[in-house]
Length: 136
Image (tube, rainbow, N blue to C red; front, side):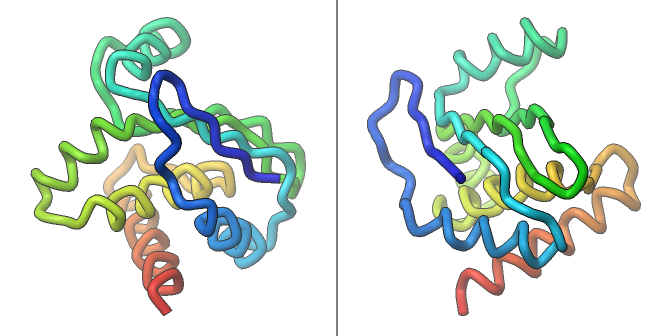
């Protein structure tokens, strides 16, 4: 089950994204466990980054992986404020950037990394693939 939660923000993410995210998981040959998206602002996610990862910088997403075998579970923290800023900086629509980040978190849970240039290229390719599927 995929659930959306909001920390100090009004509900604003479309529930129809849940089916699309479930389809990504199934397309990757995985099973859906429990995934919680926690939507927040920059300051909330900065605190999570500092407290749990000892990183002192803003980010758009942090994924905590609770995957067991092929069952995908985790908590995915998303800064809607950072997504909005990134969309402006990258000249993208907000909703497209939001979908990219939502897919990015799922892909991490499916085992994809983005630490090296090669890993990042594969991650971007997968994101583009699933974004195109959403738009069809």
